[in-house]
Image (cartoon, rainbow, N blue to C red; front, side):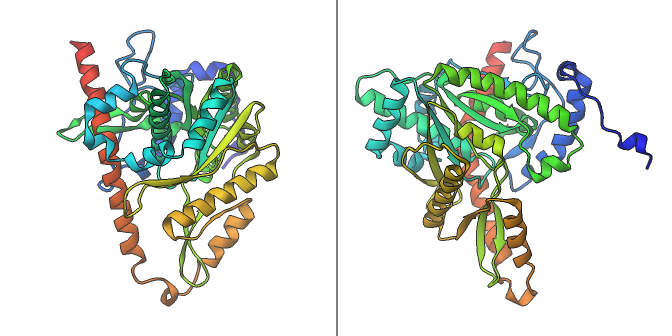
Length: 389
């Protein structure tokens, strides 16, 4: 291969407005998105159909153009009356998580006090499923709204809730259970939860994709600048999974399964170390045999990388207590590589039912997602059709 082909591609800010460049990135991300589609997953791949807001926001899919790095919250209808109208079938998906937040009265009051004082709350979790951070943020929002109503206060509106997700989500949708040809973009569903910021997390898969690093840098800078401006206003809740990549299942030297939260880069730690910001760590297990559950830390402040490390360690401990599966945080890539090497054991040491257990958990995860997002996808599709008519 010639050196000319290997030469880095020059990228400028103008490329963010290029449909051609956006389409090239779409093709790369679609390869990653395929890992989350199929018979065992609730997600459906979306074709290339970018949404041009200046033409008709109800046409096309949000997030597929590179300069569409922030998806605004859907302020009408609000999440609470929408869920009430959807009934018990929607609530069952994460009622235990909502109640875990709501019943922790000291935490609810502490969060409310911080927000009233124009401070921000950053919610960080482990990352067992692609959709867990959205469920945590929606559950926290419902719990805080219920807490505010108890005190005759007006709940915060959707634009105070924010989450960071992988830009790959723009390639995924949720199909109508009664008509597989009708698909609601996942990002449109997330608009019911809050504002969504799209990122290129520096995960192993992202690094393997043929996306120029300079393009990644420019997109990330624009997204972070917009997010920082909003956080400066105060009274914001921001949720994300620091690793940016799903937790990995690895066998230890004795053939016993353990979970690993992958390493976090320094740029992400900076988000956790912002001034005027408190951190809430949450261990979450959506595939638990009793249904989705979580366990949270107390509010804390992370003023150093070491404090961030310790918080991720505590989230791993929370996940261990919830699931009984030993969970660890890999502070650096070398730790993860070492644990992976340990897993390369003789066949006879592997648990006989490892594959069966993994299949069952994937099925439970898919069923959980269907319950939680089924009503939301039906609403989005119905709303889009009403606007067309």
